Amino acid sequence: MVDFLLGGAAVVLLVVVTVVLFRGEHPGRSRLVTLVALIVLAAGTFAVAIYHHQSSSAEATDLRLPLPLASAAPALSPATQGLGTAILQIEIPMGTGDKLPQGAIWLDPPRPGTNAYTGDLSLLCSTPGKADHDQNCTGADKRVWTVEPLEKRAVIAPAAGDPFTDRVACDVSYSPAYLELKAGAAYCVRLTAGPSRTWVLRVPSFPAERPLPASLKTEVAALG
Image (cartoon, rainbow, N blue to C red; front, side, top):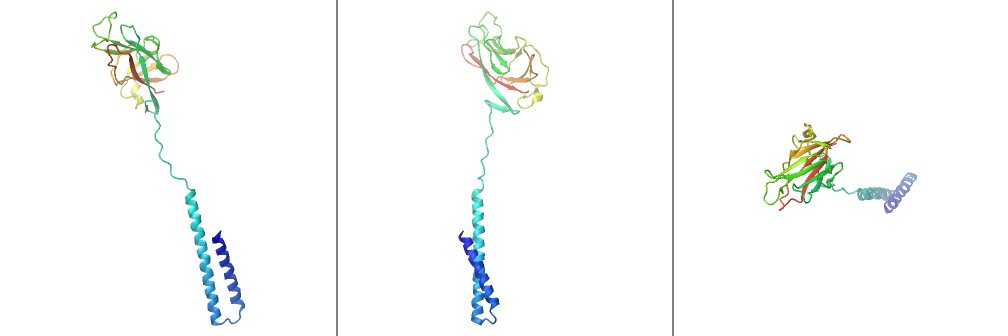
C-alpha cells in the first residue's frame, strides 16, 4: 500500500513540474535547476516504488508455492510383492493323532484346511522305511514332505524357474499326482473347477520341531 502511495505522489509531482515548466515563458536558471531536480526526484521515487512492489509480490508468490513432497515409500503386501501380486503367508496346522503329520490348504482364497482332506492341496510328512501304522516324522526320523491334490480339486507341477518374478515359469505340464517338496522351490497349481487361474505355492523352510512338526509355513500367490 505504501508503495502505491509513493508511486502516486511521484506521478502527481511529475505532472505538476511538467505543467509549470511548459507554462512558464522564460524560467530563470535557478528555477530551471529546481524543476529538473524535482523531475529527477519524482522519477526516482516512482522507480523505487515500482521495484519494492515487484519484490514484495515475488516474495508473496514464493511463500504460496507448495513445499516439495517427500517420496512415498512403496507400498508392501502382507509378505512381499511379486509381479504386482501379494504373496501371502499361510501357516498350515498338522493334524494331531495322525501317524503321518498332514494338513491341507485352500487356494481360492488362500487359507488352511481343517484336515488333510479339506482343501485343494494336502501336505504330508513321512519317514522312508516306516509303515503307515507307525508314527512317522518323530524325533530324529528323516522327514520327507510331499504335496498332493488328494481330492482331485487341482493339478500341480514344479515351476520352471521363479514364477514370483516370471509368469512364464508356470507354462509347464500339470499333473494330479503327488510331488516331493523341496525347501524354497516353487510349485504351480491350477484348480480343476472355477475360474481359470494359476497359483504359486512355496515352502521357504521345513519345521524342525520335535518330537512332531506342529505346522508348515507356506507362501502363496495368485498369478491370474
